[in-house]
Image 1 (cartoon, rainbow over the protein chains, first blue to last red):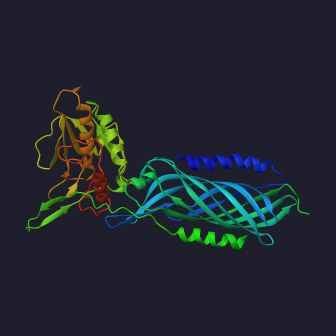
Image 2: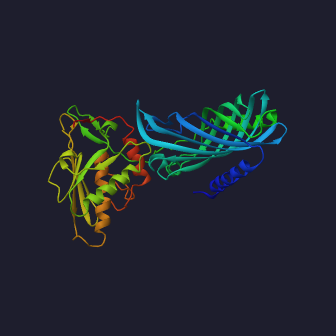
Image 3: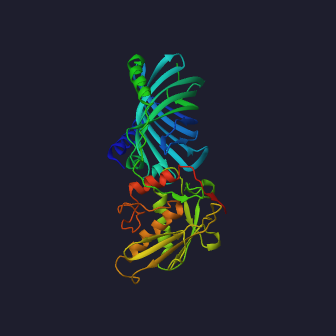
Amino acid sequence: MRPFPIACAAVLCVGLPGILQAQQPDLYLQLGAVWAAPLLHDDIAGQEITTQQSIAPLIRLGASLPVAPKVNVGLEATGAWGGYSADYAGSSTDLGNLTTLSFLANLDGPIVQRLRWRGGIGMIWTIPSEDAGIFLQGSSWNALFSAGLDYYVPFKPTFDFMISARADTHTLTPGQTTLVGFGGTQWVPQVSLGVGLRFRKAAKP
Amino acid sequence: MMRRLLPWMLLALATSCGDSAAPLRADSYEWRLFEPTAEGGTDTLAFAWPGSSLPLRIWAQDTLGLPNHATAAIQTWQAQFLYGEFRGEMVSDSLDADVIVVAGQAPAKIRLLRSMARECEGATDVPLDPVTLILTPPFHVFIDLRFAEGTPGVETCLNLTTAHELGHALGIFQHSPDPDDLMYSDPIVTAPSARDRNTAERAYHTPTTIQLSR
């Protein structure tokens, strides 16, 4: 594994407990689903091949705390599990499962009452169930950029319902694709929806 | 704050539309058979195992370490493909096999692909009916020693020759003209080259003309 992603993951892992120990952090837990655009497009002898992830369930855990009157900073970890396949010549070949673990450093702030924007950068770790095909050389760490909206519905003094819509994009450059001659960087946009609960240590006045 | 972040978000979304460029795979060799027809033309014979018949079932005689060499050959060829086009597995009963690997000299046959490495030799019998152009497995692979077992180089030779012959059973029905390729007629290299990989990938993404009967 490359040192930079490890350093990022370490910073996030070390940073999260720090935020949790800080005064008045907001914590949230979400369940949802993520759809991703094709992981790779290829053309062999005039035949188009698309490698596509299935819609995957996700679990998201995050924490944030205010750093300015209208800005929060936070850390977030998301795990998603789904299958992926190669589609060509009118048929689909099951390639196994993909697990993605993503770690984001976020900023968020209000747009209107109950609705907040969110933007973040981080890393995504793509882990195949089997080291084969485009993942013959194993899992890969890539850069992740995220933007989204969160909508809160007060539920109890210290709990809110939370609905999130995210549009993310990440790079994907598995070692095997580089080895066989793919050039440039593959960008993989993804869209996710999540619902969950936000826990506020400080009750709303 | 939102106004400051917006340009960066838009930039990220704009760059997110990029695809990596697929390799051309132009560097490959001819893998198909060309048969003269009664009309004086040429018939192109192309074969690849369809996805519905995978994993390919391979049985190897328990001598000369052939089961280990066949297992290694399966892994070698699986690693050449990006999209699960080929998968193989060893089976314990030769009756269930699509490919049978045995030790010994190949019988004299017309449609036999032979390879002559330094310390051993191999041959693959393609079970193709020349009239109906129907292929009825199993393929028979013959591996034979040219020197006594244990002679330096024999193990490596058995390994690369088994992989070479499995390449024929996959549908690469011709030899490469380049000695740097595993599918060269007298193979020397121990692993498929980029040209072997390109050829195998092209074989599995080109329409086949041979019908499979199981």
